[in-house]
Image 1 (tube, rainbow, N blue to C red):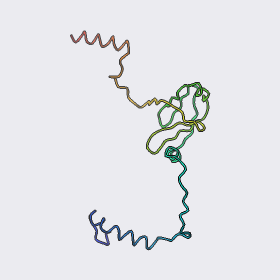
Image 2: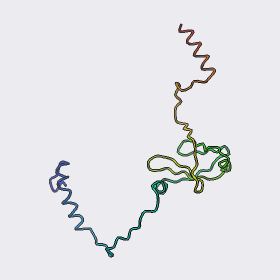
Image 3: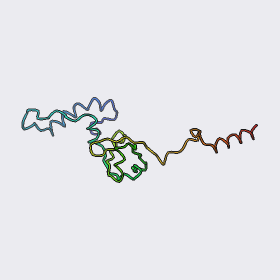
Length: 142
């Protein structure tokens, strides 16, 4: 682009089709067999997300918990999931940031306990000691 004296986005957009044609002429190679040999995609979108996910194995504790990426995951304690204590599960960390937990071909439901997340004091409501302290503070302010 510097050799063509292009110094703006508008000029580069005008120059780009010529560059692509020149590049393809120099490096393109015709297919040996002109017939399209691609097969149709059989996997669903969800299966493709699993295929391209970062996959790691984790051992489940007796309390049906395990840690991944500084977060504790709590597997729902159903009757079927109780058998997973001390078993190895697969954690699928998808490119979009979602997490899926899989045991064999079965996806598990879970909850997240984030140790790094700070507690919001406004959400703490049902603590008997807190209620007594708030009443004491209110009485002092009045």
